[in-house]
Length: 222
Image (cartoon, rainbow, N blue to C red):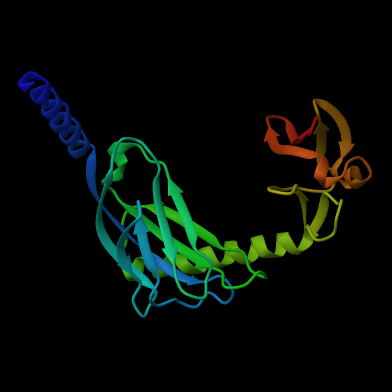
């Protein structure tokens, strides 16, 4: 009986000790704003692994030191505020990089007419440096909103946005050099980008990419 108790205690101790070794301190910081108007949000609760680690100040900023697992599993951070939809951000980072910390800019949405957004950088930055990142993130968010508005026109793949041609799938985009860019569909050259709206529908696209010596390669759903 004593041997059984000793074995059980040893296993429990080893398990706790192993979990302790897997824990790593790191810093998180960032700004939380409204996805609608990009204004800072005060009082946003921030959780990691179901544990509250901080709250945003009147500038929408937060900076906290946290302890989480360093075993190469995703670090899941959740942002919550009354009147807004919860936003979950999952980051998978090699344990050797975890100690550098994260810097986030998060856009929470409070209605169905806006989409949440996020931008993550390695390194826990000060408020001033995080704020300096905001215009670039806002510009990216407005660009994505404009592209989503274009997607409301069903079927089309080729669009012009501010005088520049783009190919849009349901989840990605490619900026073209010109309407004469060559498009390859399912491994076969099909012609110029200007004609693609007569070749395929947007909901047929599985993926899009660029390859060497080819302007655009499109794979279709089977």
